[in-house]
Length: 368
Image 1 (cartoon, rainbow, N blue to C red):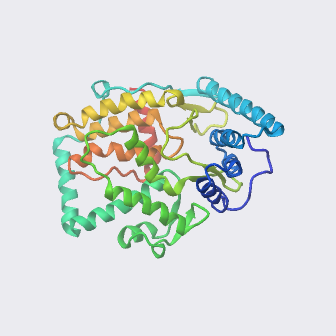
Image 2 (tube, rainbow, N blue to C red):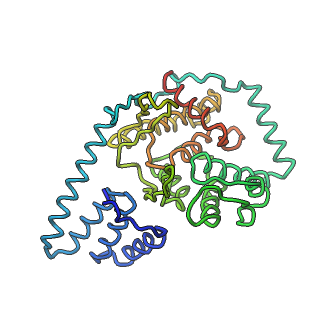
Image 3 (cartoon, rainbow, N blue to C red):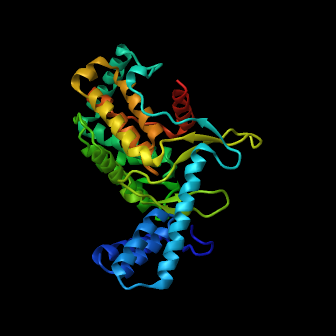
């Protein structure tokens, strides 16, 4: 939507957030809305930009024929783009084929979980976790594990990649810039940006109330907003190109079609597409899923189900809905951890080096 050559090469933090603060400070000033709308447009958020341009038009009151005509054309272009994206959900472009079709949330009664630990294996894991807490003290163990999850969950999603002895340093010594040996890939702000992201994640993990037996839409959106607070501006990486900044809409369900591609490793093979829920239906599918999940989180149901099977079931259903534009994996693993936390086990942590197997297992589950 943004014409080539119009994007700023400076750090988006230096112009997006000042524009946002100005619009919040002067909510009735049309120019502030217009400036923020343009900032959204530069960061590829055309839906947010359109909303703000229309609000600026409403606040201006005095007709402006040139701007009104431009906005009319822009609105039509956005709608055309939305329709093209909607068509691509069922008819992938450039010869792509659908490798994983969308299926609505399924109850655990029809969800088979193979290879889940039995009661004896679960008891062994619980004993190991308790022994770890005893060796360090419960508080110190919880802090170290939270830092481990914060780093590896972020690396798994490509938010950043640390090098050297950074992981062990951060886990042992805390979320300090001095603990980071090297930022191999990450935000333009470097170590400072990485530490801010980790602090948000760590603060959330240590304050999350896992005793809740009822999770609402607002709870899910709040988790996303807290985890993504310092990741509102993301960066798309492309070979031999500078990272391209884009705006993450945090704390809200997505407004666009989202699909994922599966790399076959063969340039002659068509690219393969994974379907997620259509954006118009995300809220309804999330309500269906939350109703089922909340029913499973009651004490009676927890006693009737293996916590690992429940965790896998929660993870799979949320993954196929994919409620957010970005940050889904981090939110999904938090919510999927609930049955484990209630059983006295720690949060789910997936190491970045097993990412291919992790995604492959999700794809396999979709065919069950």
